[in-house]
Amino acid sequence: MIRKGYSLELKGLFELESALKKINNKDTISRYKEIFSKNFMMDNTQFDDIEDFFYFGKIEIKPIKDYTLVEIWMIDEAVDKYTDFSTWEEFLKAAELKGRT
Image 1 (tube, one colour):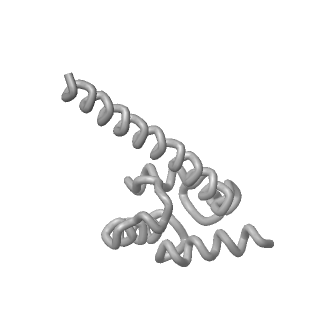
Image 2 (spheres, helix red, strand yellow):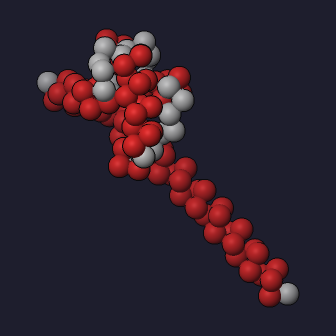
């Protein structure tokens, strides 16, 4: 009996964690969309929006601070391949500057 209750609690925790990740990802997508406007993306990439960039680059959408070094390297490769920039840092800075003007 106790074990069943414990299993249910763990299942509930995993479901909660999954739900929180989805909410966090939606917030992250919204922030990226604010930085990488549709016009910026169309002018500087092969895509209409940042979500397409992540999709075609096979990059999980999450806050930049949560990426590993290997993932950052993969993002840099996608930036170099699909945009007018060489690295994520250049891409991000250009988008932020464009947003301020």
